[in-house]
Length: 224
Image (cartoon, rainbow, N blue to C red; front, side, top):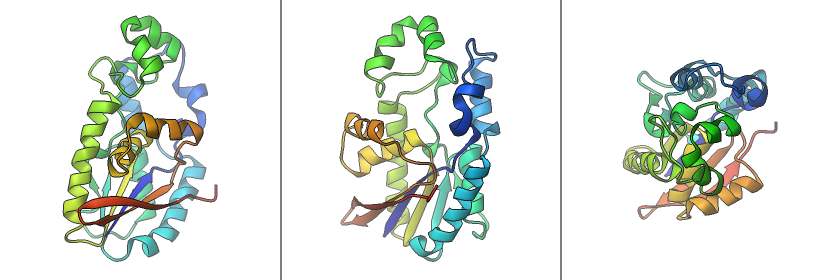
């Protein structure tokens, strides 16, 4: 029984974040920034190619009738639509459990603007990023995202009693939280690995479920 965790294909934000999305001062409110991130940010041409590559490799990895879930963000939804175009009605299912970390009023703020606007949060953001809670209704990696990841892991485990494969199209921060849970590591350990080599766009993490526990069995990454 297999769980495949997939980071969405390359988005326009991934490719050009420092030229277009992070302006100082930011020209829009936190709520507007979050809406842009959730509903507008789509895939680059490279991202479309990566999603098409997923369409080639997933049938063999997933087998017949996988249970497929995406986050509620456009870049994950679009990746799944291209990668698995022939799913039956009702799939994939969208779930906020797989969403990107919610950065609240800090969405698309540069570090300078963030630290100047919220000086009390600066030390946690610099030194303990996993416990830093984004201002204005945002969440921390250690609580909000990790709790959501735990709920999704439980959902996947339940679905694997009825299906051979569950597939999750998600984001880098949610994948970090899932890795910590599924691989029985701490968030700082996973983040240290991410600093050495961030999970690529469209990469597939493979997990097998045995005796109620997930085991990491491999990673498949796109050629570009």
